Length: 172
Image (tube, rainbow, N blue to C red; front, side, top):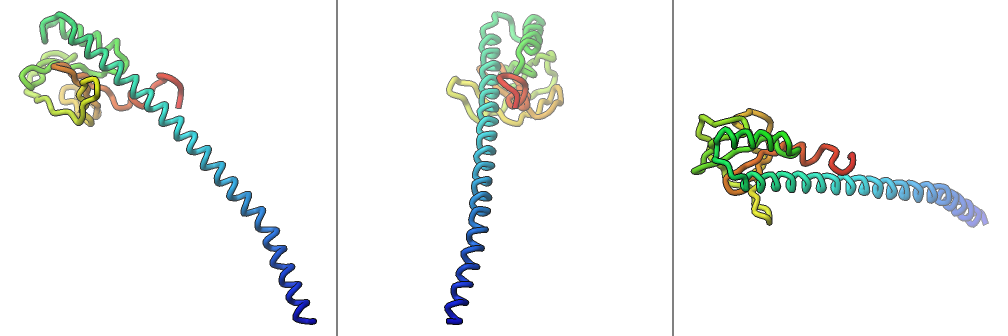
């Protein structure tokens, strides 16, 4: 009889502990799942926003490249340099414009270049023919690392921060 009584008491204690701990564990797990889902949603929204901004930057810079290539002005003339400066000022995504001839940079939106700066091969080419060069250090302006987009003999340098910041569609 004594053993049965200990058995019943022990079983009662175990069931009481399980009854107290189980709801707490279930709530902790549910809270964890909700927090993970919310973080994933925020990350997904951020990724969409950054992708939209990068798409805008590439589209804007590519259109500027096409417009610059269509201009009927002599390369590296004062007229061309003025046009490059105007395009740099009027195109949000473009930081600097360069013209290459014979594989070397001949002039930029800053003016005629004096040093021989060779054109480097792109890291990849987009489906619409724009070569993309990542982490380019501008030798003329000595600015921060940029992304260079080039089409034919023109190259535009885009500040990497512009592809991921600025109020293009919505705030982060």
